Picture (cartoon, protein in one colour):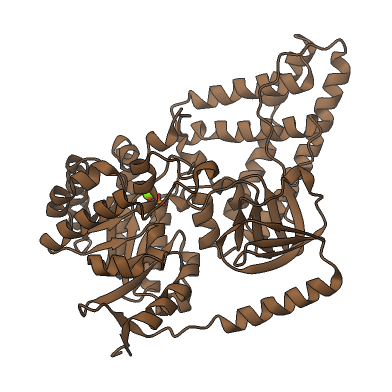
Length: 544
Ligand code: PEP
Ligand code: MG
């Protein structure tokens, strides 16, 4: 058995089969010519067969775990792979230009992807990402990389250098029990997604994926920050007993309410990314959804979600929370969150790029669809809208105007829709400097300390090398938080914290002293947070 350490970012214990995810090889081979084009063509056709097999398996697996809709991605890719144009493009480069199979796949695939990308229709444009995925798959097969595209049929734990949110979505399965990353970051969207999926996750683990063999067993204790590779049968059986004890001990009182020394009720809210995370326990265990990251609806899919699909989803959130508030953050895609259906351009500095509200204001049709769906769903519960990545009051005013316009449009269509409170997210230094003006225009504020820390300290929230410097309770941040809560109180509007600082009980007492009383966090952190409140603050049984 080998014992290793890491930093647990989603607590919990798990055990299962180790699945090693090797990093994808970048596609930058130098041009190689071949003296034997027939052999290269043969290689290509064999790789195509293997790719087809992988896609079929992926399709079967994802139909079972994710549903037909997500699985359709793989079916579409299989059709593209067998398409005559694709085959012609690759084979003519091999036979006429004497390119190697790998090089021909790369050049031919990219040419076709570029053709799609140049098309007017958004749906056609989105196909270029599929082609590039196919190129990557063929490339991996041709270069002998053993990709494991199919989750195994038993409990498993992923080991990778790092994973993107969309890669994790690809691996999503009820059998995925844990994640171990040799790099990773506590503040990445992968971390947020893992917390949302309640998957114990260890980052900065002292193991490289290429040092590990797949198919061995692994035990993971992310709470303690350890993993055990290849443990003996006896160790594993004791470990599994501990897992069962933890599962049955984790109960905390659900219906209690807590109060600050000033007598304000302390709101414990949840951050989620899909209605699947709403279970009856969560509905009871929090006072509402403080942050619904709507961009997760757009990720891992090739086609944009329609107004109807979004409406259904927001309606489920509204009804599922039974009158408790649900703050829907408008699409905050960009930076480390990519969505093939949006065809985002590659950027040098994506964290400083076209993301959040900037992107939405540039694509009014995309934004209108989301706003219409939220307005319609607001009939079914207490929905609120939150605008991310603001850097000016004008951006908030533009959203306000658009919202009014849409509400009027819907009322003219005969719908009786309620007004929708509009909140400003404070997560850029500019928005802190403008917090008084934003508070004057907004119905509520919510502070995203993950990005606010990144942009204030000039530290990439995903860079593990700088993790010790990335401090959400840095004095500069605390001074900013004080400014913001003052502005909110002066404007008599609520202000919550929805970034990682909200769940960190080391700072809760200080934040409550500052005047904060609403904390929104991943559901996995709510029991620990409530335990802290239980031990330090006054409480009462709810009147209902
Ligand atoms: C934040 O930035 O603190 C936040 C809550 O938003 P996200 O983590 O989704 O960027
Ligand atoms: Mg943010």
